[in-house]
Structure formats: structure tokens, C-alpha cells
Length: 133
Image (tube, rainbow, N blue to C red; front, side, top):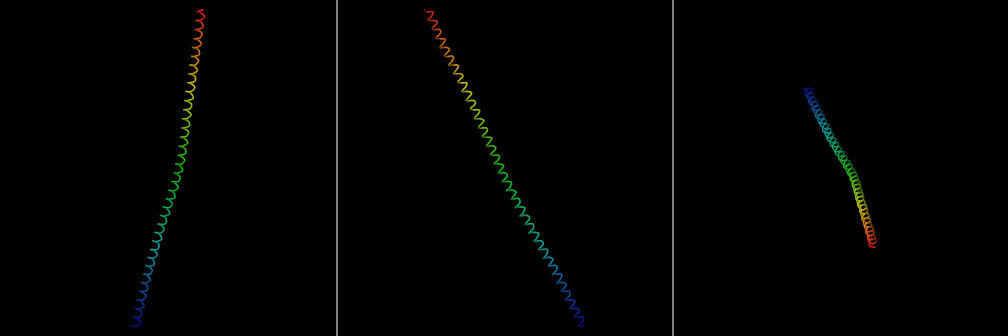
């Protein structure tokens, strides 16, 4: 009958609309899922970039700190070396001064001994001359 055919046609159209709605819903869900996956991926990439940037900044800070530390150590080593050189120079000067003093004392003794010898020789000559008279 006409009613049945219209009913069946309407029923078929309703079913087709329902299937389209389900398909649209599924494709919408798939689109949402795809968007969520893309957002998640973008977020993970952003987090990874930030981690790498943080790591690079940390490396820069660490290398700068290491350079400063090396510079401080070099300055300390330089100061220690300068002190050691001054100390060695002072010891050398002290040794030279001591040797010079010892040499002066030796020369003074030698001079006194020579003077004493000359005096003794003169006294002996005087005594011999005195005896000879």
C-alpha cells in the first residue's frame, strides 16, 4: 500500500540519516582524537625542546663556572709560583750574603795574621839587631 511504501521510505530515510549521523559522529570523534594526538605530539615536542634548551643553558652555565674556576686556580698557581720564586731569591741572597761575610771574615783574619807576622818579623829583626850590638 501507499502508506506502507511511504512508511518504509521514511523508515529507510531515517535509518540512512541515523547511519550518517553515526558516521559523522565517528568521523567527528576520529577528528577529535586526531586533534588530541596532534596536540599531544606538539606538547611532547615542546617539552623536549624546552628540556634541550634547559640542558644547553645548564651546560653553558657549567662551562662558564668551570672557566671561572680554572681562572681562579691559574691565579692561585701564579701567586704560589711568584711566592716560591721570591722565597728562592731570598734564600739565594741570604746564602750569598753569608758567603760574602765569611769571605770578609777570612780576609780579615788573613790580613791580621799577615800583620801579626810582619810585626813578629820586625820584632825579631829588632831583637837580632839589638843582640848584634
